[in-house]
Amino acid sequence: MTSIEARDLATKLLWAHPLRLQHVEAVAKLAKELAIHYGINPEKAMVAAYLHDATKYLSPEETSRYLQKEVVPDHLIPEFVHAYSAAGLAQDQGVKDPEILNAIRYHTSGRPQMAMLEKIVFLADYAEETRGFDNLKVRQVAFENLDEAIILTLQEILSFLASRGKPIDRSSQATLESYLSLRNGGNS
Ligand SMILES: [Fe+2]
Ligand SMILES: [Fe+2]
Image (cartoon, rainbow, N blue to C red; front, side, top):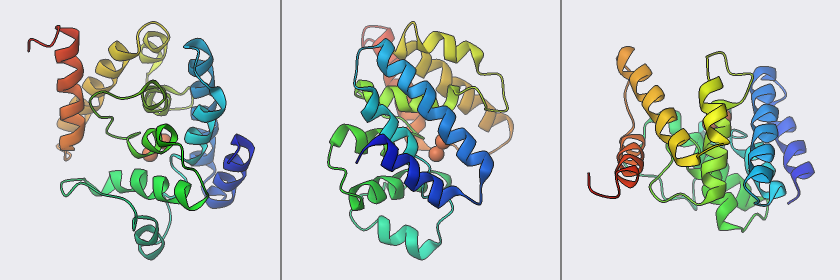
C-alpha cells in the first residue's frame, strides 16, 4: 500500500470527522519530517500515520472484524482499542511490513524497545501542530532525541490523566518506566 492509497482510505473512513482528518494529515506531515530527519523511509512513516486512527469511528461489529487477527492485551483501556483495529485494517489492505503494523498498533501506548518507525509515529501523534494543547516542546525535543521526547510525552499524558482522575493504561506506564530505565543506563 502506498501513502497515497493510505491517505485515500483514511479520507474515506474519516470524512464525517474533519477534525480527526486534519489531525491525521498533521501526523503524516510530522512523521514524514521526522523520518527524513532520522534517515528512515518517509513513505512507511506516512502509510502508518494515515492509517493510525482510520478505524476510530467504526461500529463495534466492524471493529471486532478487524481485531480478529490481533492480540489485544486484556487490560487495554477502550480508548486504545482503535490502534489494534487499525493494524487489523492495514493487514486487511495487504500491509505486511511489521514495522508499519507495529507503528500503528502501538501509537497510543508506545511500548518498550520501539523501532524507530514506531517512535516516530507515536511522537507525531502527540506532537503534531494542530493538537489543541501546548506540545511545542515535545515537537522540538523529538528532532533532538526521540527517547527523551517519548519520556516527556508519556509524563505529560499520564499526569494529565491523573489530574482528571481518568484511567491510565498499564502499557503506557510500562513504556515510560522502560525509557526512564534506559536513560539511567538500565539501573532503575
Ligand atoms: Fe489514535
Ligand atoms: Fe491520532
